[in-house]
Image (cartoon, rainbow over all chains, first blue to last red; front, side):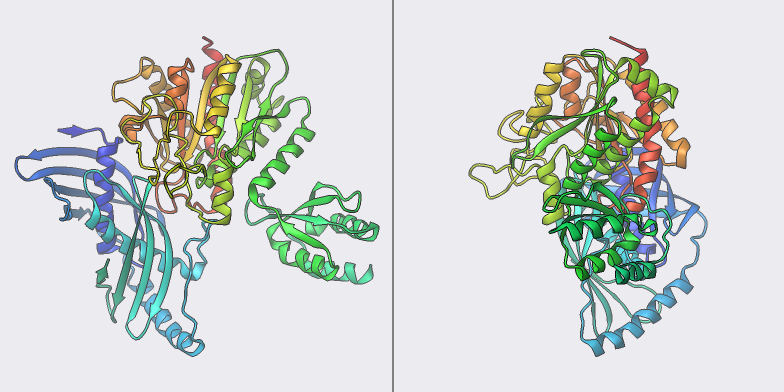
Length: 213
Length: 386
């Protein structure tokens, strides 16, 4: 059945799809967010659950003029409180490459690591601060945490929730692997708060996040 | 005095800084005449752009000065060097101070009234914009009912300044104020607002103590007597959407209810929240469309289009229940069910990237784009008396 794209049920399913995509494709050089739900449809599958078919228009926050179109399918399993929705997302066209930005970020963190060891100061930072400020050098970490939060949002979503990342409370660089321990506050339906801890690890090369909640 | 002036020369010239972006208001107490004189000299240094909200006059009386962000460090060093005692005013006190300035600057248009007190006994102030008459039909605006939604109180301040500025200049504002009054409550939840500064930036509710529970506060946007206790509100005091022990239990809500009832001619209620970029109208407590759905939908469509025309910001619109979620006990449902036909809720920027923690650089753009939407609603109210 067709769903009005501007209404809540479509937006809720879209949030899961975008969270999932952010986890897969987001990183310090790419922050994908939803601009608009173009169309939405729901299919009730007996003994299985509710499946949403979505056409979404996204943008990269680092490239505001850009438009990324994608289609997504979100299946909420019937009566399930423990299994995450099944999500499939297909991006139309190519996403802008962030290889250069990722490499720079990786090298910067590697070099930082030495400094931190020397000064023995763990990096505890609130991102953003109360006034929404993110220091420029922390913006890639903010985006990385936002990407990781997509995983948490996907894994914990049900047809009764709509999670958003509210604030990154702690980002700690843990030696020797580059691992960012992120403690974040999430908002469910913009109201309820829930806390999760994410550990996102990266070895040299591409991002293959391992996320522990 | 010479060393004082030399020090100031080092600070250099600054560009015009907008209010909000890191500016602070300092409350300084001058102990003697010499310190009063020093403060006056400070005020005369143009490049510092220090702006007195309370002027240096008599020793022992507080002097309030707003210091633009780039000059903060320098000014504070100066004050320390000269042994001034000062404190940084927290924002709701700043806003109350600024209100007095606005009233002073526009005595024929703006007045400040108190409609009650919060749970923690903070005054609940409302700005009244009126060009006279007696008991004219009125528009009610409120911001900051959910304390963490800082973009809303800031937008309230900007909008108040704008209204005062535009009366006599802009034909729509002038037409509106020539026949109607505007009431604007900016810090609708001052206890919550203070708490977001002192303890928990993400606090939403009031700060009332819940009997028998360790959890504090009631959701002031679930506490109204319209579908009270229904879907989308919680009976658990620890919940962010706790509706409270009974409708209008919260003093902050009761004060508005009593005001609107006593006034008798409020024709529109616009309650401003953040975030998610939406313009909503009743109902939240039921899915069935309100009798005036069609008209409100058309008006919302126009307002949202005029908002988008400013910077391209996309808003969705519709009834609360359909567009956002079912919610019992909301402000605008109560207003609508009590005769206020044009009741709207705005959810300002953004759509989730920063959420409640919207950077202050977005305050002026947000307020600027919201202004035409507010005007559209107020003009419609003016042109459709009932």
